[in-house]
Length: 454
Image (cartoon, rainbow, N blue to C red):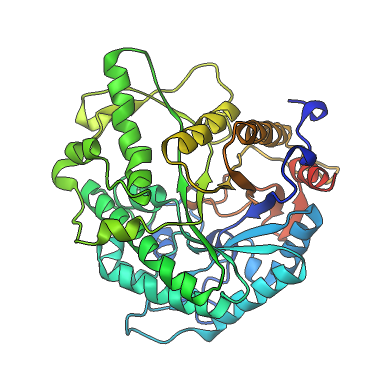
């Protein structure tokens, strides 16, 4: 889509929230400053071969010190909302549950950050858990242990008592699939595990902690809006054969319904429970009711669709006996992900049809390409610019179809530490020169600013 037929801000409701997203470990740096404890990602980065470029989050974008200029840039863009996350080990370096005091310096940093947002007219959207679990808790079993649920509630209470007078939008967890499935089973993310059963148990405790945290947040933050953010994918079958269509249902059961069904009061999908067999999580009476505690919005992170085929080999097809198929001849990002604005429409309309959430917030959407800083001091990221324009057009289409999307948060404000990829992938609408920590708005960021200020 050329800029000539790109959407304009007036195409969207006047009260629509426009934002950018960030996360603590990916941008803050200050990895060992002001009493911060070790996180599972700090430990993961120390293990040879875990991070593609051998890097870590000790400095990252140095947002811990440079946050005023980052918030100035967000304000200059014209966004009215700013999504950030709190680093649990900054608040409770020892994970707590009696293992140490609250770190006042950590809370004071988020005081400054939130006040800085409000001073610039930015609505703070706080994610409580964006994957940086205190390492001390991991050594007690991490999310496979029910104790971590109790620790999360303690942490949530401390943070929301401190910030809840100013922060009115709370996201309990970001992408349980990534923190649990990729962290405890696929061995890609911290803590680096290979057990399917551990991943399912970890995920159960994550969504349980979400449900149990909601009344804590509401108690400490008057009139708060609370939700959870899921990474979700529209899924198609490689063919219309009965086998591939059955594989689609099995894959969707684990990829999407395993998270959505319990959150919307249906418990875990029976067909998926049957397939996971002995790997199913231990569920205590009352857990499913807690997980289904009503929320104010569903956060959705959308990046790409998936296509699957029937695969009965457990080594390649996994527990769902389905494997991913790479479509030929499609546009892809630098990560190899298919670019599909239509997939966003398909996903959002499916969510409305099957689950009918009161509000959907698109809490992440973005792309990575091989960005180059040119001699003119610019980053001409035409692929990302096109991606952004076309996905906003798709969002407009979904809203016109009646989907209750009330906000869009571009991932990400800054190039940052991209987990197992280190600094090799750049998702930012602002380029970060890591040697000098200069921030330079890319062409996509400049367009987003023009769009927001029309």
